[in-house]
Length: 396
Image (tube, rainbow, N blue to C red):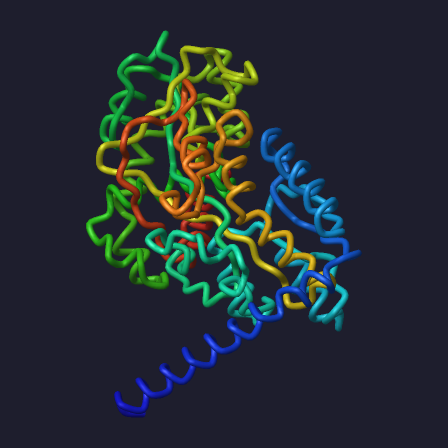
């Protein structure tokens, strides 16, 4: 096919998508009517008390306003939910699946999208979409185009946490971290991959250390992995002997690291929420002297999304719930550090002044410095990095 025909084909697809989304937006009252009485089984991480409390509030609001019941199915690994959807569809459950809405990351979205297991497009037809900040990466998830098959929900960025009482001058780069670990043996660690935070830490190191960063934005291959990662493995070989328990074992999660930081067992913890330390101080899980910091060269960040499986039973109810979660009211509450502290995906300048103030408020312990955001590698790198890490270090 020549370039002219390709351009014509892409233009036709764009027009078709736009028409479909416009038609769906016009049908929103009908979608709300269909949603009334439906029960939405929302599969989302259940490991954070603040997140669970926020979702309980949102579920209560949607029940009262729209007659939609939301059940939070608390999960630890979204990949297991993907497998369940795949199994159900393969078994012929094409309209009565057990999952109506998922909180997914880029790797899981890619697998669902490639397998034709997503309902849509629907996201950009939501009434709340008009306030979404299109300057944020809301149309790409780990370098995979979303094409309206998932809706952005919040923003995240790798952030480190320390205690001013014991660590007044934290490490500010991968090289600094190695020197810090050597000077503080047994007081540094990171969650064991494939834990999400552990894998994110690996990607952070890779982005800083690789001589070929452009390769990370493309689908992984054996050649790309061999070219991009040697400095990462050499770095970890040097770092691990100085880690907690000599790098022979690793904390199970970031939450475990927070507890170890509070107990003084570790000098650093990490999170993907720049406001989490503020929440942990408020809930007295960390001391008031805890603080957040980033690396001047940047830390990895992204937008997190919500997707509806193709075999969901309550597709209308799921859309109504997501539309509420994207509303200024729900986004402002979510961004409040006293509630959750998860960054908004809305264009704050378009919101009423009182909501702008709420979203910009920073509680003690939250990240206040400006840290450049580094792009996520292509989703296919996640599985490759985890497999290589487990082969090299997982059996120790």
